[in-house]
Structure formats: C-alpha cells, structure tokens
Amino acid sequence: MTVSRTFPGQKKAAQQGWWAANRWLVCRRLVQLALLGLFLVGPLCGWWIVKGTLASSLTLDVLPLTDPLIALQSLLAGHPVLASVWWGALIVTVFYLLVGGRVFCSWVCPVNMVTDCAAWARTRLGWRDGASLPRSVRYGLLGGVLLTSLLTGTIAWEFVNPVTMLHRGLVYGAWGVGTATVLLTLAVFVLDFAVTPRLWCGALCPVGAFYGGVLGHTALLRVAATERERCDRCMECFAVCPERQVLHGPLWGEQSPVITGVSCTNCGRCIDVCPENVFRFVPRWHKANQ
Image (tube, rainbow, N blue to C red; front, side, top):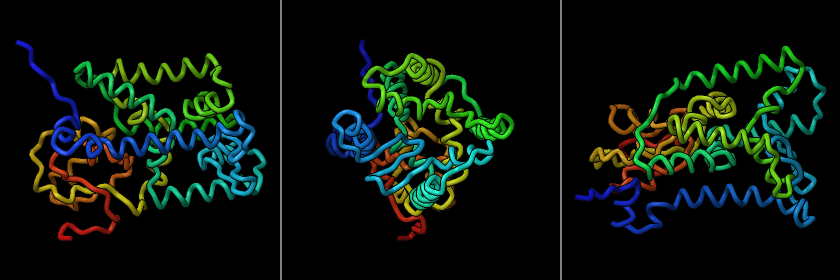
C-alpha cells in the first residue's frame, strides 16, 4: 500500500489557497531578486542605479551603504577608512537595528536561496535531521574572524565569505561565476543537504552571528504566536523554521507570544504554513491580550 506524504504548507494550501501558504516566501524571493537586479542593471545595461556589492555600494551616486562587519574588520586591520564608508556602515546598522539583524539573512542574502533549496530537497526526500552543532559555534567563528583581521591586518573573512563571493560573482561575473565561488556555494549546499538542514546559517555563518547577536536585539517588527491557543502541534512551523529553537517559549510557554529571540530571521514561513493561522507579524510591544 502506498502511503501519501504531506509537506509543510500543503494542508493550508488545500484549505486556504496556494497564496496563503506561500505569500511571505514569494515576497522574500521577490525582494532578493529585486535587490540583485538593482546591482545587475549596471554591468548588463549600463544603468548604474547601484554600484558595488553587498559589501559596499553607492546608490544613485548619493547613498553609501557598507556592511558594518566589513567596516569593523577594516578598523581592526588598521586600514584607513573613508568617511563615506563609516556613514554607509552607520546607515546599515541603524536600519537593521530597527527591522532586525537577521532580516538580512532571510530577505537579502543570496546564500539564503541556496540553503532554502537544500532544505526543500531534504524535505521532499523525507530525510530526517542529521547531526547538529550548537548555535554558539557561529559566535566563536565570528570572534575568530575579528581576531584574524586584527592579527593579519587584512579583511580576512572576505577571502572566503560565500555571501559576498556569490553576490560579486553573479553581478560582475557576466554569468561566468568563478570556480572558487561555485565550489564554495556548492559546499554550503552539500552541508545543508547531506549533513543537516540549516547547518550553515544556523551554526556556522559569522555574518548571521554578527547581524543577529549584535544588531538583532531591538527590532520593531516581530513574528508572534498571537493565536497560540489554536495550536494543534502539527509541527509544520518547526519543519520550516530555520531557527526553530525560537518557537518553543512563545508558542507553548508562559512568556509573551512575541518571538524576540535574536536568531529569528523574520522570514515569515511559520505564518505561511500554519493551517491554524497561529502566527502573524506584530509590533515588538504587542501584548498577549490584544
């Protein structure tokens, strides 16, 4: 006898329609592709709306934006840093302090599409989770990155950073992405596909550690289990959440239903797939009795 399997979001899609079960995923993909497109129209069409990469860019020849982690590495390495770079780092820092540091991971980072693809493939194959690493490992790697910059006088992480390497390869590689970039991106995919889901983003990536641990404490918009009394423990939210440990307390504990854990990426997939509509985006100060 053949046993049919259901996948996260399938029940909600059957009950409420495909869009209800995928709207935040679609929005994230559109944002990621739109941001990539803004960088691409320059080298492809000569319309230089944005010059540079995610590491450092200039929009409309006016607005500088700089990855604050790169600015910090430059400072530790002893490099002279232009005032525009510091202004760019300040703008990015303030933005992610307001929206949540790990919004970068789910809504901007191009590697997110790679890790999401690996997680999707594992789900379709019905593979169970493999060995996991403590989330603290990524903070240790972040400390190692900063220490290496201090000791070597280089922006050390950028030699092997999959995020900026993939983005730079896509934007300036004229579709001929370099071998090192391909191999590094493939390695991230294999880690998440063959070892355990979300291993790169959840336990290894120092960029995510910086944006979450340093910039993730003050976000004004959060996901909340506002209707947690409806939860039937179907576990679909846990199946899709890249940082599932943030769900326990707000969903089943006595604490506020607002997910304030700095690891939450505000990806909205728990909102998408929950057939009981337990989750939604709320202001950080939302109260359970509202």
